[in-house]
Figure 1: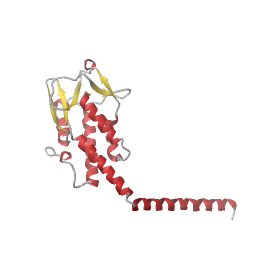
Figure 2: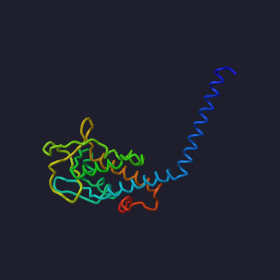
Figure 3: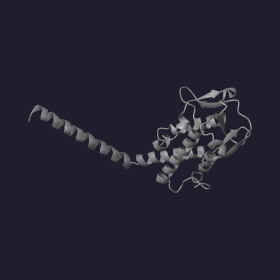
Figure 4: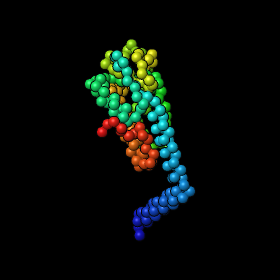
Length: 206
């Protein structure tokens, strides 16, 4: 046997030993319930996230009024079908301070290391950079979305995407919210099938 063959044989045994060591480590890890503990923590984070997500009212301010509804799959679909928004889906979106702060709180929750990637990857709205905009500088072709009850005037502090990002429009905002809800629903079906929140389900839309 040549020196090269001997070297390759030793390398092969070393790789095999490493694989066996990793397999044994995983079995020991799982034996003591660490995997189950990790899954429980992940589910706890998702439940907390969903609780925060469904704890506010989502509203939009029009030129002559506003609309507001408890946040849910139905609410997002309602906004998507609302003529004023549907006909101006490319208009720019601004957030009031309360909605901005809600997005930032949700962003903190999804950045926990145990938070599931399949939901986090859909939560782009909550990991954006936003900047304060003076209401007088708002694009005329725009809507202000807010958190809370009906209102009839713009807030003093409003927010939109900053730096080099193109401010998102109505279509993007509502589609992103729908994607988040769909990711949560998929997670619940797989991991918590008996505990799916009622607000994830459509009551009024097919």
